Image 1 (tube, one colour):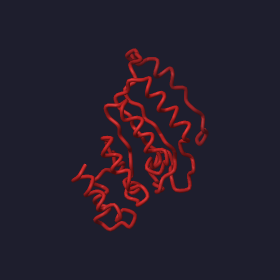
Image 2: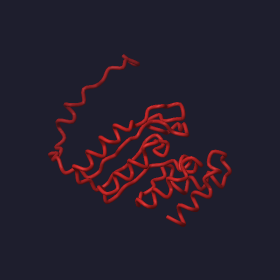
Image 3: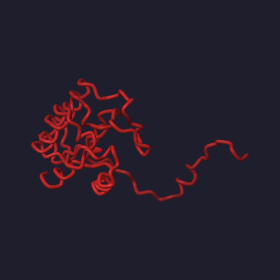
Length: 166
């Protein structure tokens, strides 16, 4: 009947496809989600992060992540959220992770990084060779800044700094 929400059994269809066998390899990339608190509330956000969200990684969990990393050989550490810059424990997390990964990256919306209270993180990122991954992409952010979108005006100088200095 139309409108019924009955889930179709797809196993018989999948069972006919000759999938290659899966083999467990070594852990190469670890993504650490530090919480759902963000300074923006974007419609496209897949974790529904925003200014009203209070969930964030506790200091004890940071200790657990650092202890895990010390026992592993991980190539890439990917820190995401919400807005990781709003996590009070972020400097300790980055400093602790840096010696254990060839590549350390932080996903950011850049507006959180452009705030006065998080400006110190730019030097932390530079000194720890953190790769900054702008979620909307620098070109899109540049277009929003030059178009005068109020939420993005404050990061115009930050974008120039990130592109020219880092």
